[in-house]
Each structure stands twice: as C-alpha cells, then as structure tokens.
Length: 104
Length: 494
Image (cartoon, rainbow over all chains, first blue to last red; front, side):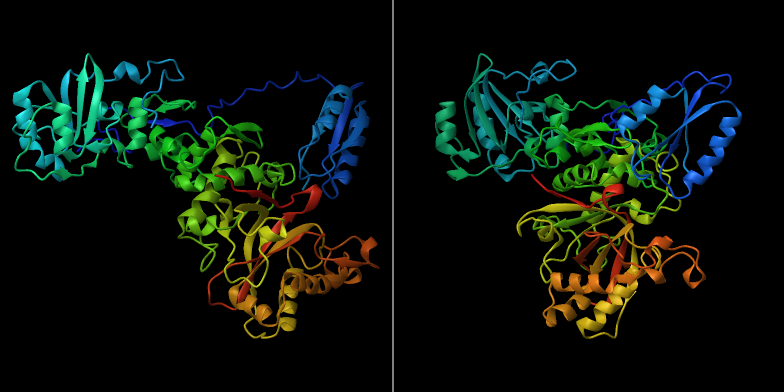
C-alpha cells in the first residue's frame, strides 16, 4: 500500500506543520526614555471608568502635585473597551508621561 | 484537482518539473486490489507481445506477475496524468497522449491498440475500480506532494525526534489540551470546507488586531479538531466575535468569568450533527466542542490573547475552552434566536454572546406558565447579584420540559418576554447600597425608581436541552450594551 499517512514521517521526511500564529514574532517595543524627575512635566492620569478609580487617582494627583508635576486628567468612556484612538493621541500630544492603571 | 498547476508561491519549481513523462506506446495503470485489473492480465500479456507496453501499478509492484511493471505506489504517474479509474489504458506518441480508455471494454481496447481478439475468454465489458490517486483519504496529501502548495503560512519543520503534540505545547500554540498537528495536507483538506479563497481576510483579531485570513483560521480549526464542513461556522463565528459591537478585546481582557458563547441556528446544525439536546452544553459532540474551541484558538494564536497576559480573568470558566451549542428548533415553543434577530427560517446563523455558566434554575413543581415564569424571574433576579441591575446581560435557556408548559398554555416568546419584563422590574429602594445589610447595590439615586433587571435587549431567550429534566438555565452575561458587549449574529455562508 502507499505510504501516505498524513500523521507521520514514514518516508523519513521530518513532519512539517503550518504556523498557527501567522509567524508573528513578538515585537520588541522600546519604552520611551524615562524622565529623570517629574518637576515641570505634564503627567496624564487616565481613569478607565472603574468604580472608585477616581478616589485612587485623586490621591495620585496630590502626590504628583507635591513633586511639581502638572497633572491632566483623562477618562475612558468604558473600562470594557480599549481607549479610543483619539484619546490616546490627545494624551500622547499633551503629556510628557502618563499613568494608566487598572483599579479593581 | 489542480494537477496542472504552475510554479508554487515560493517560486520553487511547480509540479511540471516532477511530472513523469509519458512513454511512447501503450500505457496501462492498474492495481492488484481491483478485480477488473486482475481480469485483464491476460490481455496485458497479449499487448506486451504486440508492441511497447508500460504498466504502472499503484498498490503492489509485484502485480501483475506475468508482465514487467513500474512501481507507482507513490502515485506520481497516476496523479500527474489524472488517472481516475483502473485499469486505464493510454496510447502515447512523442510524449503526448493520443487516446485513453478506462475499465475493460473489448471494442474500446481493440480500437485503441489496433490489436484484434483481445481477451477472447473475457466478458465483453467490465467497469473499472477507483484509482488510488483519487482516493478521498489521499487527495490532500497528494496535492501537497505533487501539486505545489498555494498556502502562504510559514512552515515549521519539526525535528525528527520531536513529538508533534508536545511540539505544539512547547511553542505555546495550545489551550492546555493537545491539538491536531496542522500539516499542510490537513489544512488543504480543511479549506475544501469553504468556497472562500485561502487568502481572503476574515476579520481583525484582537487584541493584536491581526488581519486573519481564511487559511490562518483553517490552521487553527485543524488544531481544534474541526472537520472541514465546520469551517464556515468557524469563519462566521470569528467574524461575529471580531465586530466592534461584540467587543472581543474587552471580553478577553476582563477579570470577569465570561467568554464567547456560540449559538448555532438553522439547518446546518443538523447537517453537522450538532447537539441541541441532551448535554448540549457538555462534552461528547465533536462539532459543538471543536467549533467553539477553534474560535478561542484563533483569538489565542492569531490575536495574541493569552491568559495571564491580555486575558486577565480572575477565575475564568471551563466554557472558555469551548462553549458552542445549537438551538433546539424542531419542537421549540418559541421563535428561534435567529428569527428574533431578523433571519429567515432557512438561514444558517451563528450568534456570539458574551457569557459563562450555566447557572441552574430548578422548578419541578410548576405546571402553569404563571407559576413557572415567576420561578424563572426569581432566579434571573439574582444573576450576578440580586441588588444589581442593568449592567450585565443574560441568556435564559428554556428546557423542553419547561418549554412545554408554556406551549400548552399558548405562551409564545413575546408573551414570556413580556411577563418576564414585568416580573423583573424591581423597586430600587430594595436594591440600593446598604439595604439588607449589604453594602453592594445600586447607587442611592435609584431609591425612588422602578428598575429593570436587564437593559433593553439584554436578555436573550433560547430553547435547548434533553427531553427530560424540569430545569432551565441561565448563562450569565457580561457587561451589556455599548459600554460592553452586544450579541452579534452572522449568517453562515458556504
């Protein structure tokens, strides 16, 4: 009989499979250079719209004030979806640094 | 079969480079496992004496014993020269085919060969047998071997000593269970399940927003264990899950339990042998289990959505391996989920719903719809938390035995829904924070309001389950509406 079993390497040829990840190499994203201090910088605080996230961010804001940073507050429409691209762009343009954190 | 394809996509020589030439004279293609081929052996002996004859044998190089034969067990000659039946007799001159006949027919063989009195002891006519080169279990493998692949995906060559199942785990391709190794032959066979081109883009898969092609989804469907005929359902499910409205990204990222639940409607469910009856949410049905799994593997492998990374589920749920079932339509007292969502009775559809479960509803006593609907509502009220409302969706799955109570009383889906809406409108005063000594609840502002448990459109109703069991089920939903997920229905196309 013919040796055509799809599951083996019967003719001595190594098994070849197709990459299910579309060959996506993990892209190395380099973080932006770290600022040496926050004094005089504009820091964005992104509220992801989880309940009581504002309570936490108020504390962070007063702390940043003491460090001499200018704080700008932003808010995602819903925690359940990624931040809209326009919002991300606005933050990138206006801020030197941003703090986005999940607050559950 | 595309046996005359040109160069392959990677520029390597196409099949013509390996096409065995036609020897001049007569050519017979036979196999031992064919009574007609056995029958014509004396004729082949006659022809071998009369002139040049080349015999190709597909299964046993020693057949036929009395005539020298060329080994074609790799089926290279048979595949390239489109042999569909054995015996096939070909007349060739200067490397070109001039005539062919299949099976045994004395007049045809005599006409083709110019030799008289062939097989005087044989019957006049015998049909041939199928050629091994068109055996359905071999065609995909042969197309890969000889045809030059049209597939674009990167080939991953496994080491000789590497176990292909372990290799998939090692590379992070699995959901924690073994996957079927996606060989080229299996993926080619999978692609036979759809009329769509392999390079068609189906959807952008979150979270990485990878533009996934039919081929890439087919690879993951192979791994999930799908049969080719399931592929159109998988493609539709991927399309539905990757819409803005369904919000697969958020559903993946949530700390909540939910994942995509697939409900299949239409004749295709029966055609694929899907389960809408006993144990419809459970194990044991290949289509149910593998279609849901394929969607999750697509999100994992093509979208890059993995637990502990973008998937931040606190506990998750076993349904995130696969949660897919068909609606029990044939004896349903209700219009189907698909009909309610605007599709005709013969449309094949898949609906994605963000949820988990099931949560049991027990009522073995009610025999009137008025009583039963109160039971259903009482259980639905506690979905998520009895003091929370409007945020989270749900799917109510009514069992056949419960459904019959509504049917016998003449309640259709609209009636059931209207009664549920009324029973699920609650006094905000009983639900605000602090009431009953429970800090969780609605904000104080709702104290004077009448509050619906679910947002408008936030409660789906379907009919499924086995013949016996006076239970129904709630599939707890996720954040509903524009701020979370909206169920999406997509028509399944071949």
